[in-house]
Amino acid sequence: KLGADSSINEVEINEQSIEDNRKQIEVRRCLEIAIAQNRTEVFLQPIVDATTHKVIGAEALCRIRDNDGKIISPGLFIPIAERNGHITALGEQMFEKACKFVSENNIEQYGMEWVNVNVSTIQFMQHNLADRFEEILKKYKLSPEVIHLELTEAAMVEENLMDSQIRNLQEKGFYLVVDDYGTGHSNISRIKKYPFINIKLDMSLVWDYVKKPGVIVPRMVQAFKETGYTVTAEGIETKEMAIALKECGCNYLQGMLFSMPIPVDEFLEYVKNY
Ligand code: C2E
Ligand code: MG
Ligand code: MG
Ligand code: MG
Image (cartoon, rainbow, N blue to C red; front, side, top):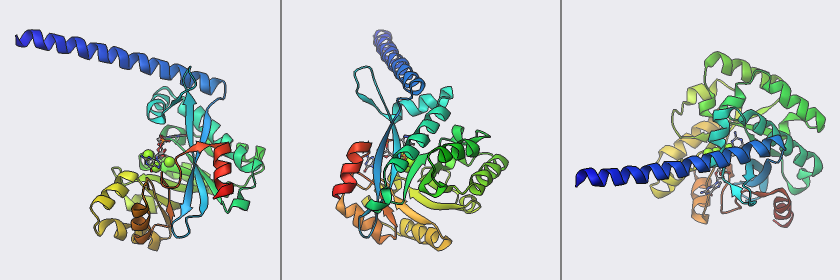
């Protein structure tokens, strides 16, 4: 009897993994087409001042579509892009589209100062990264302080490479942000070695804190601020969360309470009417 049961389970597991495989292949195909045809899309999510709730910046987040035009989540295609090396081309397209957005729209009139772009670890390790970004900025006649680069701690890989890559970006005037802080090997002394300007607390940390407030998060925020960083809390979904994280000392808030990531034209409507 046991034997029969386990073979049924095996069949089910195999069918599931075949289904997963099909999905993966489908996502991969859509990803490759989107990149080849430069059809990766920028969605923007507002980042607001924690006190006034005025939009001060935005994060550019990548979207691609399946054959029916439905949006595929980055949770599905980013890992694939990182595995097959397409993440560098994807990241450049996002950087360029963020530049295009800033150059075509006078964002200052809405009180906005910058747009954040995500840089994957694999993209970050490209030796010509800083030159590529600089070329694109020149094409759009922008200065580097309008496009901030979000790096996760996983990007703080090999010490020597990290040092030279950061130096290159810093020499060219780029502003660097730590993304997803608190999701693992968080190492403040490591971060302090580099000229980051802003720390983004991962939403898991934010949610844990709101569920069970304690002294750790507020002390951490204070320590960051004393060191000269500004701090952003991600994943703000309710008014209560906005209040709690502001009281922790966070400078900026980002999350569903304000808006989820939305297409560029909707984002412009949003900031115009805000
Ligand atoms: P991330 O950079 O940490 O971006 C924040 C993610 O949190 C976004 O997910 C955003 O939609 C989501 N989020 C924001 N506020 C809330 C909230 O209040 N509640 C909830 N539940 N979620 C919220 P998204 O757009 O699905 O992106 C997921 C991840 O994929 C990003 O995390 C980033 O690591 C990666 N990613 C997205 N676009 C790019 C890109 O252009 N380049 C690279 N390298 N990675 C990207
Ligand atoms: Mg990010
Ligand atoms: Mg993040
Ligand atoms: Mg994240």
